[in-house]
Image (cartoon, rainbow, N blue to C red; front, side):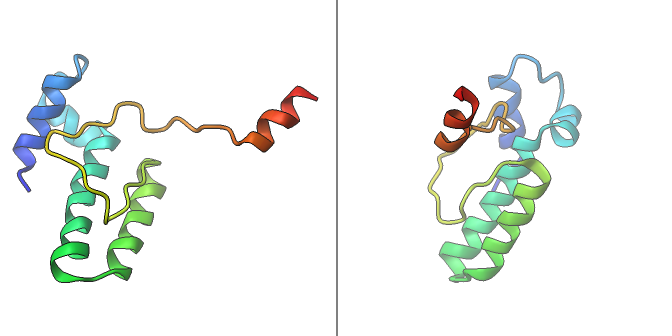
Length: 97
């Protein structure tokens, strides 16, 4: 895991990212991806299951972004606006009544 490459990727992909300090402190997607990479390592390399799942839930509570530890994502992965919630079918049908 190369944190500098993750930061550089965000700065190059997001025109509003001004510098590395802003990315580190203000981008929940950065936190989610960095911690996903740690959880993915624990899941796949060491074979742990419970600890990475627990950590992914903690990350989701903090960032509202959940990435399962067994998911395979590539380099330079960037999530923009990870807070969006998609309404369920039940909620849509209740609103139309």
